[in-house]
Amino acid sequence: MKSASNPRVVGVIRPSLYLNQPLLLFRKKVLELWQQVSPRRAKIAVCLLGALIAAVDVALPANIDVATFYCVLMVLVGWTRSFKWLWISTIIFILLTFAGISLGAPPVDRQLMWVDWLNRSMTALALAVLAIPIHLLLRAIVERERAERALQESHDLLEKRVEERTSALAVVIEELQKENANRIQAERELRESESSLRELSLELLRAQDEERRHLGQELHDGVGQCLAGLKLNLHLVYQGIPTAGESTRKYVAECRELADDALSQVRTLSHLMFPPLLQALGLKSTIPWYVRGFEERSGVQTKLEMPQNLGRLPEHLELALFRILQESLTNIHRHSGSRCAHVRLEFIEGAVVLQIKDAGKGIPDSASGVGLRSMQERAKQLKGKLELASGPEGTTVTATLPFRNASAAAS
Image 1 (cartoon, one colour):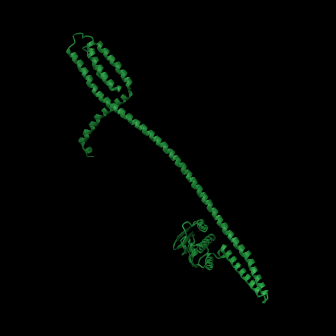
Image 2 (cartoon, rainbow, N blue to C red):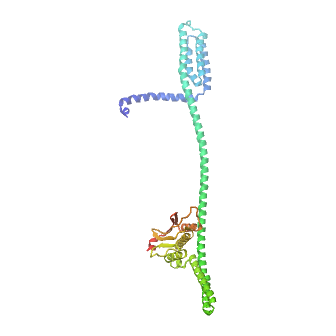
Image 3 (cartoon, helix red, strand yellow):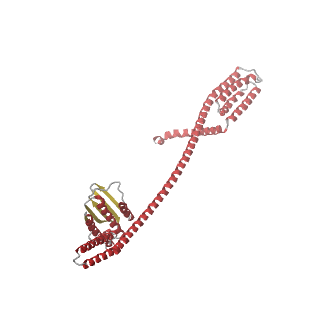
């Protein structure tokens, strides 16, 4: 920056630039001409012009130094691009220089003098001296051409390798695209299969719930009524037997008790398969009823926590929560060995949470029963989640199901 602002430096640099421009232009023209003239044409021209100069030199008087034109011809020798041709031509031109004065016609007005021989010797020396810079220039040009040729070969080789790598990369990209398309297709088919399986599972669960409803109603209305009629008839028979037949009355009393037990079990089974309270009153009455019955049947002390003013929920949500509760308590009774359980139903923002805890021996890592998969599938169908935490202190099942009006249902 400082040198550019100095006027003296600028004054020195600009003339040098102006002087170099003609030299650069001349060099460019010479290189263009060098590329246009082929070595073969240059060799033919050197031979023809050399023969012409030699003939003229012999024909003219010996004191006329025509051999000076050999110096001009030396420049053309450089176009042969051959060091061998350069030095052979130099030797031949020197010999022809002295041959011209020896074989040429004698001078017209005088004899040959030592000055004529001196001129010829100076011409021969000039030819030898001129060959040296031409040799150096020729070597530089040849080396440059060799370097350009090597560079061009390297460039061609590089382009070839780039083309090979590009084609190989294109093949790899095409294979990756095909593999990606196949993977996307496989994922799409897998999602469709999962969706179909989920829909099928949902239909199976609906069919199972409907079958439970139908079977429970049939047990209650059919077998239950028959057992109720049988109990009534046995009561009438018991009343009609005289007091003298104590043994008969005893057997009839036992039949009444068996019929009463069978009727109670049928009613309990029908209610467990599909409790009428769930359809009529919802979870507010169904969960306490089921927990009390579970305590009586299993002997497992169960603590229940749920909102006091629990409102009605959508039918599919109530059914899913009841089935998860039912399956969890059944697993506690059958597998955990726990003598206590804790059931809590609460509402959080945008969801309803059902949590069942026990103090049993936990669930093995390899355990994957039908009941657990059924609970998980019910939660997935409602876009919820089922979390299972098990350890030596017990097992906790937490079902979180989305519900927009959670606050309204809790109040």
